[in-house]
Amino acid sequence: MNFGRSATWSYRCERTADRRSQGAPSTCRHINAKIIKSFEKGNLAEIMDTITSHLPQMNLVNLTTALHRLAKLTAVSPANQTMLRRDPGFQHLLRALSTSLDTLQPGEVPAQSLSNVAWSLATLNLARKDLVHKIVIVAASNMSSFQPFELSTFLWACAKLGTVDNGMARCTELVFEAAAVHIMNHANTFPFRCLANVLWALQRPSDIITPSSVVS
Image 1 (cartoon, rainbow, N blue to C red):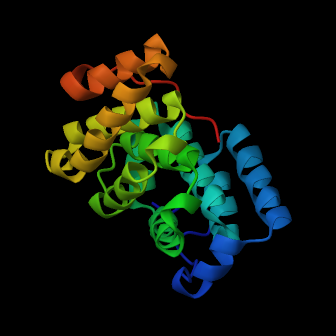
Image 2: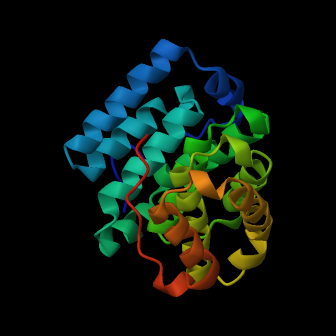
Image 3: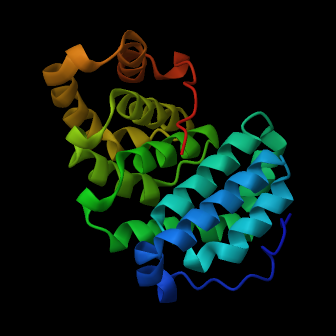
């Protein structure tokens, strides 16, 4: 099933990678506002139409906001999630996000964006190893940039993805190792709820309680 303009939209991610990563702040803020407004209407076709219309101009924050809102909108509907995963426009979004990550240095990627991507993939039960591998490498090299809630959500998502695809354990091992050191050195800054999510992620992935979604 196709939502909005997905079936006819021509993918131009590679040609617009530089423009996407450097997008004008005013344009990017406008795009984010339009994505959020579409999301608030609760219409999946409309939000996909908004996303595909603006995809060539989106920067990383726009892309992660789009993915995050789609995950939230379909979180309680397995049928909608299935249709979304099959939609060409959604696949274009994932490819654009992957390309955007390639154009940025690790220190240029906001921790909140990484957390949102991980949470969204886990919520959608979408074990995209290529994308997960990229966010894991960036996250592991930037532990100090994470707020406790962002990091605990990221780890929860990695563990949740491990229940979807057993191969995720090896793919996410690097970030768990880095996080273990970081959390041991900063445990006093982690609220109880965050520490609980971290422990569940490390020891009981099948029983982890879904945390509230990160707000873009």
